[in-house]
Length: 182
Image (cartoon, rainbow, N blue to C red):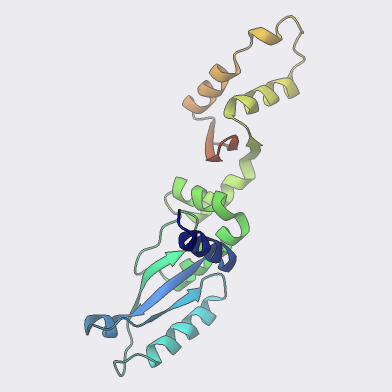
């Protein structure tokens, strides 16, 4: 990765979720006119920034706009016409939960209510799902020392996932977040 790309990623992380809103009148007339707007703010403040951008358009009387780019949403997807209230809600969720929040939103196909409620059944972060199965088993049961080496936590973890008891979101090596699927 080039140094410029690394700086851009650091800047995006520092600024948080933001959207690039373009003036459609200018765009349709061959001009690129728009503005990056911080998405983690009150929706009315975003609307004010959009109105200011439209007033400064090279096309007089411009009224229509669209989201042409976004960053800092940690994998959550927006469309051109995602409403400002929805953008603000997603941005607040991602600002609170960072990459894990973005991945949860993707897991639930953008349904923020399901993503929020998933945290009610959050089991924690583990090196693997097998480590979680081991911790869960050892917390619930006294295992005789003679049986410790015969328990297959990998198989237990696989069964938990295949049965739909849990789902995981891996953010990196040995960074597995476990959620119950109740």
